Length: 616
Image 1: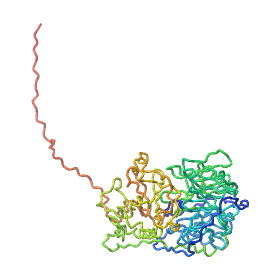
Image 2 (image 1 turned 90 degrees about the vertical axis):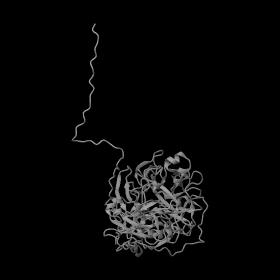
Image 3 (image 1 turned 60 degrees about the horizontal axis):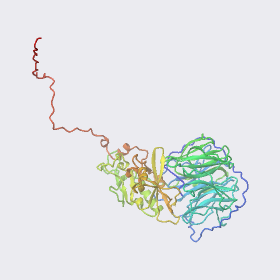
Image 4 (image 1 turned 180 degrees about the vertical axis):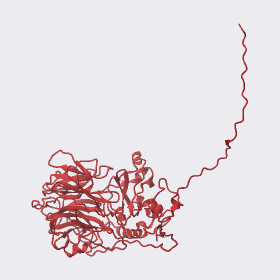
């Protein structure tokens, strides 16, 4: 599932900001009275209990932080799913007391965590057994219990107020639906909350226990809906956001259940957080600020949220009036779900959680191959890429290991060799640049461009993302296995770049249009994986709507903080960056040459003759 968005490691700053404790007290919830048919997931192809993925190439993160101990007792924490060493793992963080500490590890993804009401357990989705299932981590003993066991994609769990039930999203029969399952007896059959041809996802249980908010596109675009658990039939689902002009996602209840917050993308605008006062019928949503994936701090009604830039992710918070409650806090990787609440930690952490804090083997390391091969001091050479088809299959010696590691990872994640055939890798200065691409990163040997034919063949999709006046693209690849073992379902409408050629004036002027439907099946987030290995996406050029290559959706660069000129000096002498003075060629039309020491030759001047008139 695409829980987004967006990630290049940056250094984590720890800011002493007071966030109030989320109270976990809720009334006891009786068993939901639903009338839907019970659906038992198939167990005929149970995933293996032994993980089979193993890392190969490595890059050591410069900002992996951990603490040897955690303060015992109940306190408020963030539990975050962060990109970490090529995978998504769970971390604990408190702005006041505890720096970022890893609590799960392994060669698999752990995403969408949710803190239990009693603060002793964490529900999350994990692919540790080959398929995404719901698990519960017990903080007292470190034991992990699998709650769902099916080939379907299960993620985004949310607890009932009494901690006895979990509501979550599942992908079956080509559609996302909502299910409810016992958190104490995994053998109980799930209760089907939604079962239709719409994309229903991101469920959140209300503090009162009788409602579930979720995202659905049943009106044509993504909006926030509320399901009443005490009612069945046509009146069970209510459109809470009712904003057809935008796409909503990630609903969140306030601690007292009187407010509902969500993220809205509002057409082509960047994501923002809105809050709706449910105690005031007819009131309009209130804009709090920029962000995505909101969660509530119930004590003062503050809303914590993620804030993404094209290649970085931050954590921040707003109060109910939209004032900043938490300064921007950089995160060391992409955020794929997080929770805020009270955790009750034992005085002595379990051994499994202690071991998770140890840094894993890095996923790639640079190794210079051009040293001593007639390369001038201070510069690096170009290294050929084996079994890669491109006009010039070479890369800068500082980046080729990252390319090879990413290529191997994509083969495992997609089942096919995505990077074996490129539009471009290194481009020499002897090749004339395309229009407006004079300072392209391909000239530095620190970039590569995917073959755009993949889009025409249906194996590549792009989702448009706006950041201010700049347009970026989130790239997804279709894996060969469509059984849930590779990739995740899409939740955002891709952008159809080829619609500009359909003789539609509007699509031509806009450089394409949104696809009518979200493609079914599973998709691998290439932008996320490339970011794990340091490869950044680049913004589209200003002329991208009329110039296809100006979209730059297929180009990724490993800049390592360098600007273009400094990157060029890694492989070229400074003389190549000197712009030659234009020489005006001589003309063959003779012109008069002035002589400063000669006076002009005098010319004869006609003297008018007098005119005689007859006297009167």
